[in-house]
Structure formats: C-alpha cells, structure tokens
Image 1 (cartoon, rainbow over the protein chains, first blue to last red):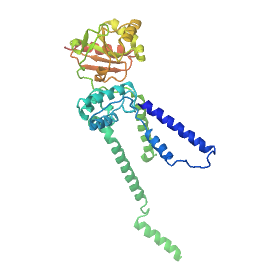
Image 2 (image 1 turned 60 degrees about the vertical axis):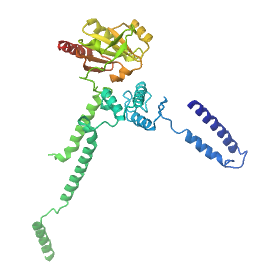
Image 3 (image 1 turned 90 degrees about the vertical axis):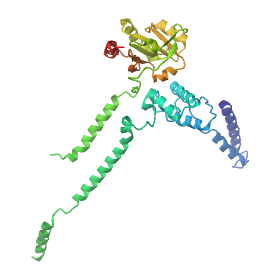
Image 4 (image 1 turned 30 degrees about the vertical axis):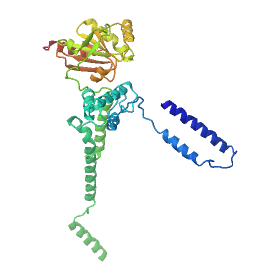
Length: 188
Length: 179
C-alpha cells in the first residue's frame, strides 16, 4: 500500500518538476504557475507525505480507545536494546516483539495498567520512560526539585550576605567621632 | 589561611567528578532484573533434538540448573561457547539451553559444529518465553535453584573467570540448600 503511495507521489513530483522546468526556461514569460490549483496540489502532496512512524507492521484495531492505548503505551515503553528509544521508535527485533505483545494484550481486553505491570514485572522499572513513583524511583522524581530548592536557597543566602556587607563599616559612635575630627579639621 | 568560601567550588567539583567517575564505570547495558528471587516463569517448549518431547521448569524441580539463552545468529554466543563447554565438562550442574528465536536446523548445525554443552535445548521460536524471562540481550544466563527460584542472572556473554568467580561458588552454595 505504502509503495503504491510512494510511486504515485513520485510521479506527481516529477510531473510538477517538468512543469517548473518549463517555467524556468522562459518558454512561458509568466513567472507564476499557469494554473491556480498547482500550488495547492503541491501543498496537498506534501501534507500526504508527512512523517511516517518507524512502526512498520500494521496492527488493526476495531476500538479507537484501544488504538489510543496502544499508541500511548508503545511511546511510553523503553526499548531495552537501544535504550534511548521507545519501542515505537525502535526497529530492533525485541521492540517489534514487544509491540506485538502490547497489541495482543490489548486485543485480549487487558487494560493499559495490565500491560505496564506485565512489562515492569519482566524488565523492571527501567522499561518505563516515566516509572511509577515509589521508594526506588523517588530520587529520580524528586532529584530535580531538590536541586532547584538547593539553587534557590544558595541564591537567597548569597543575596543576604551581600546585603550585610553593604552595611556601614563604622558604627554610629565611630562615625560621629570621624565626623567631629573632619569638622574640626575644617575649622582649623 | 584560605576561607571555606573559596574552597567550596573545589569541593563541589570533586563531588561532581566522583559521581561522574562512578557513572562512567557502570554498565548501562546491565539492567537489574526484577526476576531475581522470584519463581522462574513457567514454560513447556519442544526440545531441539526431539521436537516431539517437551521440557519445562517443572521438570527441573529439585535440581540446581542453568538456563542459558542462546541462538545461532548471536555473535556473542560464540564467544562464551567454549566457556560453557568447559563448565559442562565439570558436570557440576545441568545446563538447559533456551534457543531464542532461531531456526531448528541452524541451531542443530551450530551445536554440531561448535560442540553441545547443553543437557537439552528447548526452542522458543517466537520469543514469548524470552519476554517472560525479560531477555533483551542474548546471551543471558539464569541460575535457578532446587525450588525453581531464579537466584542470579548474567546478561551478556560469560567471560573468562566468571565461571570460577561467580558460577561455581553460587552453584555450590545452592547445591547445599534444601529442595
């Protein structure tokens, strides 16, 4: 199906390129396309060729909510072979098997949580891009907040000590004495 | 004397450097398995040498055994193969092969050519049992005790020295446990 689409797109592009070659060669003095619908055709074709997912196999769903669950699950589960990709992005063999597993489980009427439990029981919390909050993952979730707070506290402390150093170097007594001396000097 | 204030950045740098150094030494490919100390997932799969016959976890009850995940297409499996042959020669444990997503013919030929360390190999053609065991990088080796509980998982090829340092002491310890 995709191949048919691709070849259709290709021939359409070639036809358009041929036409634009005609415009460029000056055979037509008109700089603009001769037909008003041509730019629209280009636009529509480029919309048709918008990004295709890495997922190659076709998994038909009868139920749109199930399909949604499938899409959100495969973009939440980490491919353990290429660890910085989800199983939706990865074309590793294991990712393909896990997509199949997710599909089969949803088809059997399992819930999203069932699939998540199934995967974490076998591969650990690491298989989820967003692992559940528990003691083991607390540092992962709270770490950024802790660092942010530490930063804010540091800023506050630094700002405060800076204020303190701007306090007058001399206390009032010394200051008035200094003023006296200076004033006296002026009188002499 | 230097004030602590001026030493602070240096201290922070040292702490950061230590953390990064530890991070560099960790192997990101080694993901701790949640299956340790859990019962080995049940399976019943056809035996490679005789597909009529089936073998499963239940058949191994009362024995300490290794489950080694391998495939003829797996390059690292070749690397660890001589070590498994060596371990098999010592006859200290039962080694079961989980032939993962392989063709029966290729697998048999591989064993004929390189030698067969397995007491039996079972065929996991579609990799479902592999998923149950959390397999993500063949070869992997599980050590399973007499009660059918997974006690250790080794991800990636068994390296020289691992047999003496990891497997033999563990097998000996498990062998002494009650069934």
